[in-house]
Length: 91
Picture 1 (tube, rainbow, N blue to C red):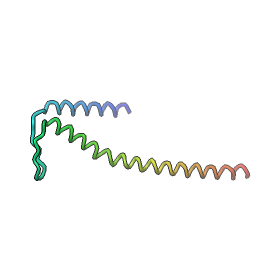
Picture 2 (picture 1 turned 30 degrees about the vertical axis):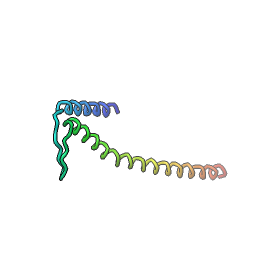
Picture 3 (picture 1 turned 45 degrees about the vertical axis):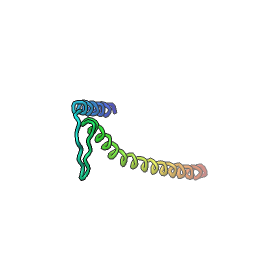
Picture 4 (picture 1 turned 90 degrees about the vertical axis):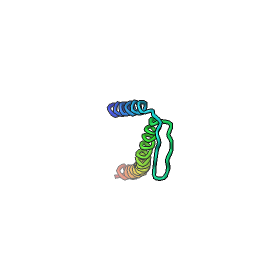
């Protein structure tokens, strides 16, 4: 688990250094739009944040769905165990 956080810290540090070294004003073009950005660092950090959200949101939704499924299975298992106990005690 600690290796994961070290990797995240190194990646965040590298991204920050890269963004700070590229602080020149830049122009962004996408299809028909052209926007003058305050700095390349802002564009880099915003792009990283959008990427994290786009990747993380579906993973979070899937995890939420699976937690609900686990809760349902746990309650079904508890009910089955409760139903099995009286049968074992009487037999």
